Length: 639
Image (cartoon, rainbow, N blue to C red; front, side):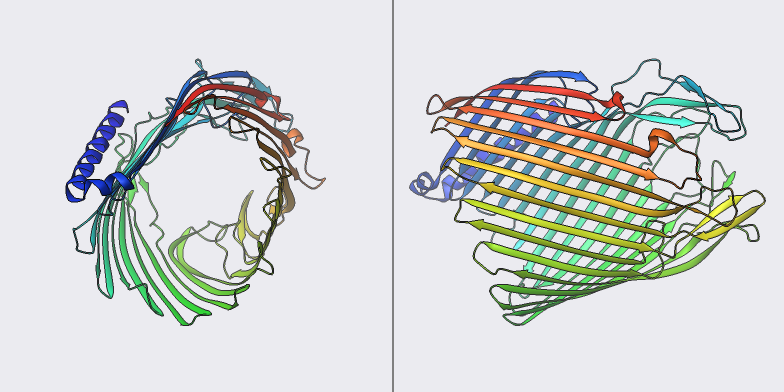
């Protein structure tokens, strides 16, 4: 990683110097000096971390170790050359950096590198226990001999280059992207069988080590009234994590390679009528090499997509648009796996056609009305039909149609006031899964106010109601199989408000509140009576409270502080005929965060910063409770 960063930095500086030299040769020196503006700042310090208890959920995205930190920002903006670089370092697993270079629009380079660490909580298993439900069963837990620190570090590097062919209106684009993850997570598996008197749980620290590399090249040209673009992309995913050898199979991520070709054709974007069309073909191939798995043929997916857009503006107040999308997925699966001993049913291929009609009307400057109709037709073949008591397992073809209509309005009744409202109704004649809908209502209302730069407020409310009365589930009973329609209703609501107030010229106070609720009522096949089901209900809600303040004492001192708390609760209820399942039916959590920061500029180009953060997590399950104190002291310089 260090070598990669060094090479990128060296190449960037070389390109910047070359571009600056070319610019100096082709332009008068006085012009470059007058138009160039440079600035830079740097800070370095030390961050003190004091963890207490389990910190995975108290500070989920951060490395809980003390260490040096630093950052920089440098920019040079000229008439011809624009260069900006910035970065921030907190830990080898927590950093980010970016670089942007542009030379008179002929040459543009963007580089980015970042890393983020995600802490994962560890659920502690009991060594052994015996269930009280007949038949009595003893559960033994095999714990890891050397516990690993659970967490995953994600790293991403990106490089994009865009160059113009001199005075010709065409461009060459090159791109590279890499995404890698490394770490350990917890895997709990069991050889559970209802009839066995003894069962075993395995607590495994599973190794995660996988990478994705992607390269892309593109060409585009503006040929007068028509534009043309072509791009080629190749992506390779690989995993070097070891196989887990247990009495049951645990699959590792499937290695794959994806190639894609895309061609676009578009008209001049000016004028009352514009059109665009695109076609792409993508192939995904399984490239896994496993000694315990043999294919009769390589699994392969072929995806073809076509899109067409047409927009017409007959009047200044009216715009109409038509969009069409065609998506075709063709799956090729091997006839057998495991060295020809296991048959594989044919892969499910699908075709999706989507079209939408949109109209936007602006009768005056204060009001904008928008209407949209969308239809999706989906067809699938080789769909698995479940085994029943009287039929054998078969595959068949099926299709379903989705339709939706949306109306929206944007109204500005007064200056610095905006109200946005929308409503949508959707139907699905054949839900594919238990969580799909056959009827959906959704709506939103947003409002913003501000008054003279002294105070402002915003409110929002969103709701989505789903109903499913068609999806079937299959239940297996002794000597018989029954298919039942299992209804499901759900309602998601979110509301929030934020108010800011500036009582003094250098003081800004902000208060906000948010609410998110989810309610679902669903049929569950938790019954020993053939042909019947029970209805369970799940509900959850979260409250978010926040208070922020910023005050500039003078040109040298700045103070800021913030408080935030998230309170969440979840409930799962069953009829009284079902035996109680204890603490697993409810969960309450509280997440708290407090921050304070002091900036002091004791000289024109130098200053110092003191930053303190406290985060805490509390839950009914106390094994996850923990606190994290973080204090950062840094020296800053700018010129």
